[in-house]
Length: 139
Figure 1 (cartoon, one colour):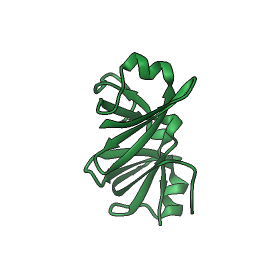
Figure 2 (tube, rainbow, N blue to C red):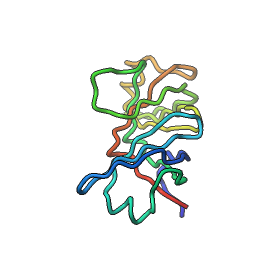
Figure 3 (cartoon, rainbow, N blue to C red):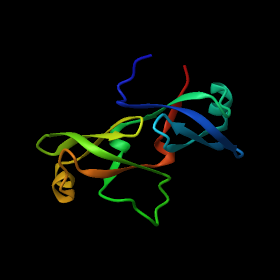
């Protein structure tokens, strides 16, 4: 299956915690970082997710925020440090490619945010992704 979603990072499920309707699934990415996805219990069953399952963490670029340092006091579970590799700026928006351990993420942010954060190739950043915005795919 081909997707228009740019951010697809492989990993391995390390834990599944189920609730009544929703579950949290933690996966270790190839670079060693852990990402958390909040998915339905039905999705866990349908995909056969269990510890050791191979998955792709899939995130739309519009759901990736960037910070110039780790952020505390947030409910956002996923904070992946990385380095800006490329910035493509338009009149209003920009796409920022970020190399993270084990892969690459693209963030779609405003042109003003790029300027305000002083982003350039080589900048250290932290990609912030809510667990509810992480989808999981299996082969």
